[in-house]
Image (cartoon, rainbow over all chains, first blue to last red; front, side, top):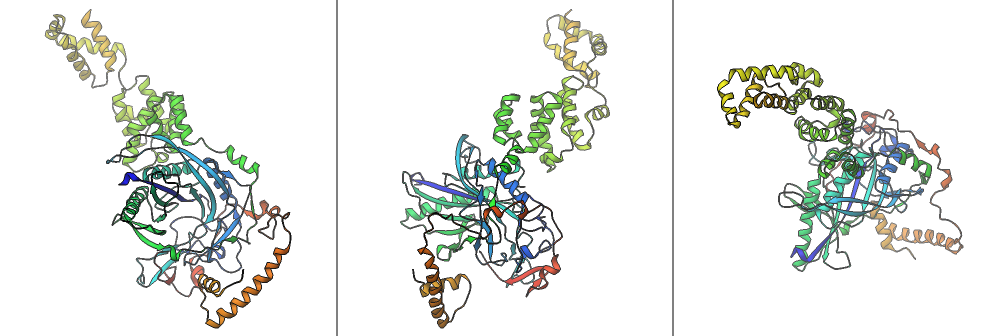
Length: 491
Length: 100
């Protein structure tokens, strides 16, 4: 039944642009401060207060737009979007409507369907259109539960009122919930990379709504769509879309019709529920905001931002494969965040060993970080410290096996590799004369075995290696032990 | 296009205004007259004139109409809610709203 239909999905993302102060006033954007502590006449909507645009918002928005291949309009205008809600003190939101900040963008990203256990089936590149990115102010926050009179009252905190947002609207280009999932992940990563948004879903600075419809395969016309809200994790987004596709197909198959409406994802019941139907849909009566002049962005301004753009994740991943000989997967993991990729390149620069840098980071360091819930930026082992350890392995001061213990100790104590190696009982013994002395003792103390070995029982070789390593307290370089043993036994 | 009573009722609803039957009648006539007056502008030939959304022209937007991203002291919680009809624990308190 499902095969007869094709889902059509469009996504709207609200990303909070990372600034110190709000978009139209000097109040702090800090999260979690005392309720209504960061407010002033402008963001409280008091009469006579006038908005003044924050320059930094334009820099950040420009970088976001460039990363998404959007065309930035040299002139755009702010508009008032009128509606009543207690967390919107002015009775309108300053947003952009018919002349947005930027338009006509796209991204080309890896995407894949998933099997029942959530594993990607086959990655392929797909291009998704981005209709526009425009600027607007956020509303405040309403608290509906947990206060003394919550049964009859709602509580309003306007600290978030006036926080700068970029609304990023996609084309209806997604054909499955996983495409939508891969896109929002990609978008979040990109905004983090160009350092315009913290991408923190818990703090609400990256929010997502989805428009979902289905149509018979091959049909030209879109079906009636529903809008999904309250998708506050990527997994919820994917599950809600999946549920909504099934629900719509079921309605259509039963001979029913889809009504245009807004639905909320209810995680507990794992379904979408009706929030409002089209009958009480808003009529926003947009008109140009008379308190703000048209927004002019010069080519020079755009160019200045273009020059400070970091390398984007996709390009960096491709370069890591080409320049350092990494596998696609390793490169993808290392470019997952800018911090990780920067760390990797710092280790490579200091150690000159890209393969080892990738292996130690992905096999050991990332695990330790995940264990202690730290990000790479807070790693107790700096890139230089890891590079120093890799060098000790490369010049055979310690064995690779020892390296694992050394790294864990470095991670826990914050000490340098050299210090840790000394504390752990000294470096690996690679001195041939020293090893020869040990081997001589082993050979002298095991005359019977030596005889058997020379008589053809060559499997005893491992026995001698073991005895020598044991004699060295595990510190002898096994390769050199092998070499010296061969010399002495086979001569 | 004349203003109908339905238009007036819809605008009143959107603006959360309660109108008496008399008011909705008289506002229909008044709004129709005002818009009729504005219709006069259609008689002008504006084919060569660029649309203007603001009384300050685009060239009026210079760097001076923007501010640096510096956080300044705010009013603070006490002053913020001081004039509110109802507040508790630093929050504005409003009649219960559910959904959106």
